[in-house]
Amino acid sequence: MPERVRVKAGMAILLAASVWTGTVAANEVRVSTDEQLRAAIAAAGPGSEILIAPGRYRGGFARSGLHGTAAKPVVIAGEDPQQPPEFIGEAAGGRGSVAIHLSDVSHVVLRDLVLKGFPGNGLNIDDGGSVETPSHHVCIEHLQVLETGPSGNRDGLKMSGVDQFRVADCVFRGWGGSAIDCVGCHDGVVERCRFEGVEGFSQSNAVQLKGGSRGVRVLENYFLNAGQRAVNIGGSTGAAYFRPAVGDSEAAEIEVAGNRFVGGMSAVAWVTAEGGHVHHNTFVGQGKWVLRILQENQDPRMKPSHGGLFEDNLVVMGDDLGVMLNIGPSTAPETFHFRRNAWYSRRGRPPQLPTPEVEPLYGQGQPLTMPNTEGSWPKDPDGPLWERGAHAYEADEVDRPTVNAGGGIF
Image 1 (spheres, rainbow, N blue to C red):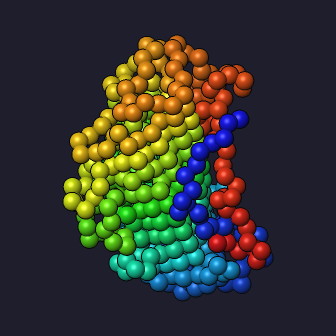
Image 2 (image 1 turned 180 degrees about the vertical axis):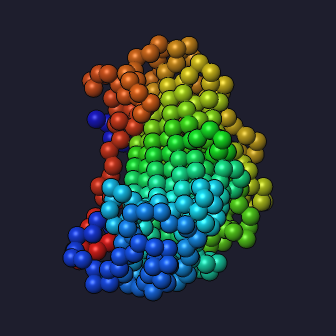
């Protein structure tokens, strides 16, 4: 297999697996009512493990200044992963516009929860307005965030000023703004999540990385009809909301790899972005564009969107696709690079790219096995497509999570 090119600068993820391998926490608390949960969150500190019994909870839980340590994180989790507790918002007959809101936190784990029907955000984690001291070492896994919004700037998971984070094995279904909205977030990973658009929800983006976000990896996720832009590398952020301060781009050092994109208006957009490595993904049946290069932040300090690398991807273009790549004004498309991508369409038309591609592969007809909506993969492991697309992605173990010697996380 030929050598694969990867962007490494600034991409180290300082995380460890959120697999609890030690004994039962000394500060373990089991709760089964809203009042008990509210009291447990208020009293939590390093080593606290709050286990929530199956059942329904009304939402509206908040805590500022919740801090664990590397060896003793704070864990908020469903007691039974097979029957996760359900937090029900106002839209579903519960309480609160947000299920859980955490500000100024560190070394916190949220696991095995269902958040449904919140008209604001499902889960909100931020730095409490202290831009120089972000929240950090936050792990979110096995959450189901359902029916948030349904319209406007209403996010399934809103993170502002969060560093060293991990969002893994979650399901996001139906949202207003973004399923995951990161404003000024750094050194994190979103992996193995499922994003599903739902009719009646506006769904601007599935994953948005803006406001000075840097060093975030979006890996091995599945996007099904995930809105206008499934992954938005950048965005348009007011100067007061950048973290830690306004630079010359909305996002930098972003990696998007091993993902499957099915349907939706478009899959990946570079928006007032610096660089961005998009590789080993599979794109099937986007409605209007596959890729976009845009400049939406008009602050004069912002450089034109520039320097993206798109390589080793598999793109299956539907008959209804308008233009494969949409280029907006005030961008620098001549600085983008395209390498070794496979392009297939029944019409056999090659994509119109702003720069010449290195070693492209063009195909016509329907050479792929597509038994379901999970994406596509080649029939023949010895064929020319085997080294392109999500099926060919191999996670870099150097940057993958590991369990620390003490049995804790991070």
